[in-house]
Image (cartoon, rainbow, N blue to C red):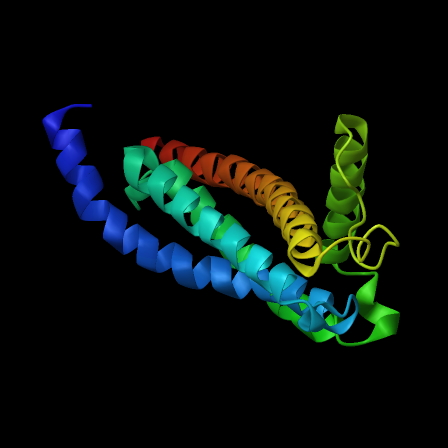
Length: 197
């Protein structure tokens, strides 16, 4: 890494860390509401700790990526502008999801539920394939061992499920940003053509 790039990273990282701390915390809220209200995870401190640890992974991951790559940290680049549009859309979706997640009739219309179901199914499949103890939330497999063992199994499954759900949602954010990138490019091209005329 060049010295100037390292210096840029060091100056940008704390600012990006602060930004992603609040952004990830807010965007994790819908999944947390769903987990606490509908999956009864408020009774399981290991599960809550696992969700918190997964969110911390995303905070540091996003902060590192956006601080390291200049085209994402410079607000004037087309990629940074597209990311900003994607983030605004995700914040709006998260706000609406928190409201909808409190009611059983609207719960299934939230993206966090479907991403969570997909992530949970994939994690259960992979763990079962690898021969690990499987039993996320309420399975008969949980409760068969000591409190420490059951807590570890629950922490592991909730952590990996939360990380995978976050990756799926991040992919959705990437797709929104990509579409925003296309729209911004078309708009900028039209402006350039208009100026040339």
